[in-house]
Length: 209
Image (cartoon, rainbow, N blue to C red; front, side, top):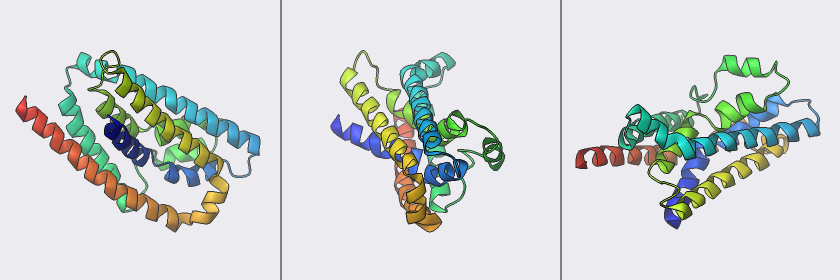
């Protein structure tokens, strides 16, 4: 169980990409007060947490209602995560997270916490796919310890994201564009391998059933 929780923590951290969110947050809050930055970072992480919790609790039931098996979603989710991994490895701006038009719109908004920070930057399609893949086979009534452990791991990633957002200004100066790209490329390689494993597991489970 501990191994599953640790593996989920690594996957969720890589998919959320808190390091890549730091320069975006720094740009969106450039010239703003420290109180505004703190409020936006806290509200964004809390909103993302609520979205993640809803998907963890009701995601599997929603798939059942649509007649979609976990195996089918695991295969598609693995392919989606693989595309995200490719974008990270080649240091391209991810279209699965936010578009340039959405970023331009966000700069004109007074409150950037819900959009684009909470969604699609923190709790984006890749993160929600990961939640469904890991929480789907886990029923809270049958395996409460594992479910709680996964929730704690997800909360840990969100706490790290909040800390990095609060330190956005100095981190941007230290890492720079090159440092951020190098870190994302390393994370992308790990995510790509895990995404392929998701597809293999989904195909294997489909044929065995």
